[in-house]
Image (tube, rainbow, N blue to C red):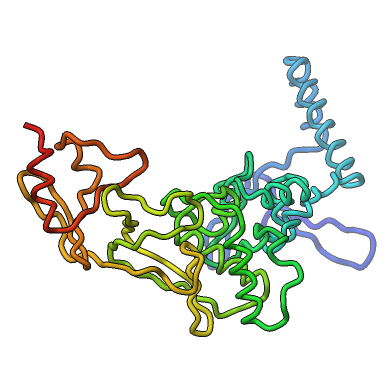
Length: 334
């Protein structure tokens, strides 16, 4: 008989084996098993905590207070969760760039202020196309029809072709300053400035705002001289000295159902045009270009080599090709 003892318990008869604490015993197949670790009695950890508190009363007190505060905060949060943040309504709704009211909301001005500035046609104070871009406007997928002055769109005819013609005539009368610097149609309505492409894009934007689809912009990418003619946004009828002509690096206009709408020359046809035939021809150290129609143009950047000056605002001097060499010889600086 081994060292096991048997203890009788109340209830159904059952034998419970007990071993001395020092006995390791044999496990399965005779393998020895380590002795079970001593179990700390309930009173031991309380005694240890009391001793710790005696040794470090301040730290222990802070720990207890901190723990209690954490528990209280947790239960308070469970019963009183913080309110959810309300997302501003303007962040939930996509920006509306198609109406004047939608644009005014995004740039944070009163609609009547935006309307008055657009109708004046001389440029919005404090609002530029960059402000529109900063608000997330994407010109590749969105249309800025909300900056088309409302007066252009009132009482339009029903038929698309009639609408387009009416918008063309109204835009020809609408304020604009020709600067020769490209701006998009929306930017041009905001600034009041631009070039022939800006005018064509104004036209395209206005027809879209009127619900007309199918207007396209066509271009002539070759530098040219154009016969003297009134243009939209300038009081003069030429931009070169000498032979009165316009010089342009390129030109752009609108087309709808086969009809041409030239917003720069305010006509359905462009004036007579002569395209460039040679560029930077050099004679006696001075460069000039030649154009169809037997025209030569010495551009403004060459006049530092000559004794004659250009009229302010002119981009060069035009003359017959047969006269350009004599002109250079006569006015060349020594």
